[in-house]
Every structure is written in C-alpha cells, then in structure tokens.
Amino acid sequence: MVDYKQPMKKLCLIYVRVSSEKQVDGYSLDSQEELCTKRAVQEGFEVIKIYREEGLSAKTTERPLLQEMLTYCLSKKNNISAIFIYSLSRLNRNTENHLMIQGLLSKAGVQLISLTEPTDPSPTGRFIETIFAATAQMENEMRAQNVANSLKKRFFEGYITSKPPVGYLMQRTNGKSQAVKDPELFHVIKNLWFKVANEGYSLLDCANELNRQGIVSTHQRNFKKFTPKAMTRVFSNRFYIGILISEKYGEAVGRHEPMIDNTVFYRVRDIITGRKPKRNGYADVREDFKLRKILRCEFCDRFMTSSYVQGRSKKYPKYYCQSRGLHPSVSYDRDFVEEKFKVLLQSITYDQDWLVWYTEFIKEKYHTQYDESIRTRKLIEVTIEELKAAKKIARQKNVKGIYTDDEYLEMRKDYDVDITVKEGLLAEKRMMEMDIDIILDFIVYYLSRLDQVWLDASPEGRVAIAGSIFPNGVVFSKNQFRTATLGFGYEAVRQARNTPMASGEPGGIRTRDQELKRLLLYR
Image (cartoon, rainbow, N blue to C red):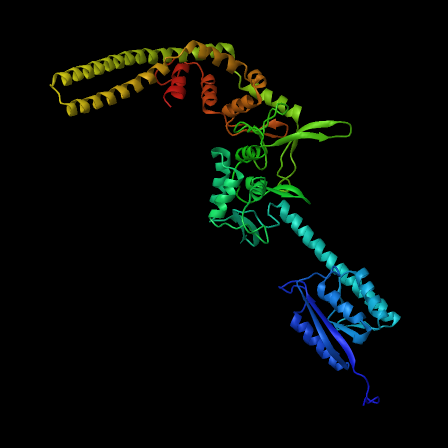
C-alpha cells in the first residue's frame, strides 16, 4: 500500500558544461557536478540524471545533450521539478535563447536553479535572472570581439592565424606562435614547385610523390591521401611566396620565410591553369606602368606594385607598396614619378664630345688586343694543320706496318685530343674578332639617349636596361629619387668623365687616359 502521509520526493536533473578540454571558462565538469549534487541534496531533491556536455559552445542551443535534457524535462511522466546548473552561462550565453528555454521549463513546471545567481520564480527574480543572462551574453561577445581584434592585429603583423600549409609548422618564438620551415617537408614541397615549373611534373605526379613518401596534410580532418585537386590548392597558395591571404582581412606580408619567388609561383600557376607561361623574371611588368620591377619601397625595400585607384570622377594610376600594416602607407602618382625617373636618366646621360673621346680610347685599346689576337689565331691554325699532317703520316706508317694497330690507335687518340683543344682556342679567338665600330656606334647612341632608349624599349627591355644602370633598383622619397647605386660600367664611365684634364707630369694628377685605363682595363 502507498503511504499517502509520506511526502513525494522531488526529482531533478543536473546539467554541466565546459566549452573545451582546457576548461578555460569555468570549473571542470567534475567540480560543477559535485557542487550541483550537494546543493540538490541540501534542498531535498533526488538527482535522476546528470548531463555532461563537453567541448561545445553555449552560443547556440544546438547541443545534443541539452536537447535531450529539455525533451526529458517536458515529458510529464518523468515528474522533473528542477534543473541544477552551476551558472546561467553553463546553460546558455544568448539572452534570447535563455528566455526561450526558461519559458519552456516554466510551462512544464520545471524550476531552473543556479548555484551562483538568484533564480527564484518571482517577478523580481526573473528580472534579475534576465540581467545575468544578458551579462553572460555580453561577456561572451566581448571575449569574441577581443579575440577577433587580436587575430586581426596578429594578421597585419605578418603572423598566420590558421594552420600553415604543408611544408611549414607552427612554433612558438619570442612569445608568439608563428609559421616556420618544417625541417622534414619544406624542401620536399619546394622541389615539387620546381619540378612542375621546369620538368613537366603533373598534379597527379606530385600527388603520387607525396603519397609515396607517406606525407600527411594537416588541413584535412579525415585525410587519406593527396589528390590532383589537393595539389591544385597547394599550388595556388600565395603563402609560399610570403603573402598571407584572409577572406576577412584581405592580404598582408607574412613574417615567415617564403619557399619560392614570384617567378616560380606564377609560372606554375600558368602551367596548371593551361595558360601559356610568361617569360621568366617578367611576370609582373606592364606597358602602362613603366617602373614595375624597378621602383622599390622606401621602408621595406620590396618592389612596389601598381594599379588604377578609383577617385571621385575617374581612376588614377598609382604605384604603392603592398606591405600594409608593417610600415606607413606609401603611394605615388604614376605620371609624376615616371617623369622624375626620366630626369634621373638624363642626369647620367653623356654629351657627344666626351663619348667620342671615350669610344676612340676603347677602339685604340681594342685594336691593340685585336692585332695580338690575329697573330695568335694564325699560330693556332698552323699548329692544327701540323697536327693533322702528323696524324695522316701516322696512318700511312700503320698501313706500311711501321706502327702496330695498338700504337697507331694510341697516337691517333693523342692527336685528336690536341686538335680538339686547339680548335676550341681558335673558336674563342674568332669570337673576339667583332666589328668594334658597329658596337661603339651603338654605345654612343645608347649612352647619349638613355631616357629615350628606356622609353622606347619593351616592358621587359625597360626592366633589363634599368637593372643594368641601377642593379639594386631605385627608391623614391620626398618627391625625389635617392642616390642610387650605379652598375659597374656606368660607375666607371661616370668617374672617368669626372676625371680632370692634366699635363701628365710626374707627381701630378692622372691624365684622363690614365684614369680610364685604371677604371676600365686594369681593375
């Protein structure tokens, strides 16, 4: 028989949650469970079931155990009268969701009891409970905002904010995690870039190579093996040339060591997308921006890029540096800086009178060496004829039986080696016998019209010409070009041109001829 005088025991559930294994946002599951159980016993409840949710965020109600617990509570046959939680943030961090859950539980006659906040069913208690729920949401959103700001700052400082691609790994350096070369895989992936660029490797060849070596991708959770599609993602990742890409933040210059340069990257991209590969070294040159691959940033020394920037009424051509976030923004008007560059070229252009003297000196020196070359060539030709004659005589003596076959073969081998060496020397001498007048006429034209020659050249030719004059590129700052390093030939001619005329007396200043010899011929 049922004893109706004995009060019915109140039934309850316990819900505990942590958002990660590190338990960064509260007590551990065991601690929450222990405290909730003690409180339930103190208030005369019998704990029917405990729900332990681990590694899931409270921003959403789409949590398996939470949904299971709500379904259990709303079933009248279970007679649940309360749910114990350590704090409201364990149940939810969204005010709207909290009120929805609270409404469902209230209709089912289930009280929500928090160990750390007031949760009584009175109007005042409900109001205070809502404030605490909103506070939990605000804390969560502020934490997310701080994390987002930190990630953004980290990105523009050049640090990757996600897993690095294959060939790199994360390592903590100076208190910050950053991508570094994977000692085992870096050179494996680098070799694949060059095999595609230079040896005709296909995406399937690359995938098979990595699978054969047992290499695993860290970007795929259920990784099985590399496929051509996976290799397409590898060979389109600009991380390998030192650029960080983010859909949210854009792009920035990374602090990690690039695996390849732009030339290899874009050559591989052209190959795998079926486009005709561009010529090496000139993938970034453009006809409408003449200083591409020439103009460098004054802060980071990288080559500046260029594009048309939208203004109020039209687009304006600009040079600018892509190293955003690492130094002040740098951009120049295209027409202004290119006009300044022509002035710079004119400043190292030489007058016709000086160039005539300069080329006559070179011609005189050349003809002295040329005459010596002719004499040497004639001696070599005579020697070759003598060796061929001696070889012929040896053959005749072999036929007559004077030399055995073995002796003749040994002698013929020696003669052939000597003849080959002498013919190589002869070819070198003939290469030296060029038409010096044609070459010097071109030099005079070139050096007296540097700015015009540069303008008339193709985009690739302009890069080559500027590279020969300024091997380290040029830097534009404060509306003028900094003093640039000249190539050796131009520097030698500049010094020779600035050498003062002198009598050549002993102990006096060197004559211009003497100085030119020192700079050009005896260095």
